[in-house]
Length: 231
Image (cartoon, rainbow, N blue to C red; front, side):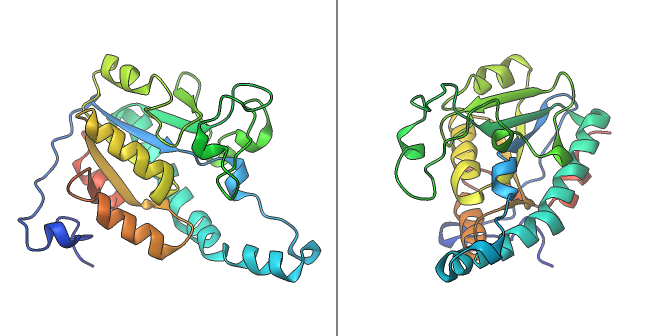
């Protein structure tokens, strides 16, 4: 297995020096769990679908296998480790605040797969039970892809003294990517936990990790991150 310091290199960083070790201070690093919500893990009864619909649903088999077999268990382990004292766990979720969804950003109103209507109090918009926030943990509700653009999360993290944010969740090439870029632009040090994220396909996931790595974040696996977390 390739070490994280030289893995996921894009054209821009091919041959560049190894990434430095992150210096993570207790209480100043947060885990941000992005959009792991019921709606994305729900699946239809394929027997009730048309052949075209069934084929489309089958295209998501790899995503669901990665989520249940790797991503959700990995995030759960990271949550446990952070709750044990490494730093705060913060959640972001997509949901609309108005009954008709008129507060959604344009990207969430356009026709197609991203046309999301998720009222904030309904079951589809809730974070999945396996990763449910604990009492007192921060949960921000966003109507944008970026967890910073549409919320007060930047201010919350700043007020909590956070300097490093470890990001995980879905989808790597959409809301995770937007959030990582926003955090970097706000001068947070960002870690993208590669095996705690997923996109619709592995090709999309891997390509986006390569695009983000080194310039907007340092990509590493959960076991690497845990090795740097404060006791």
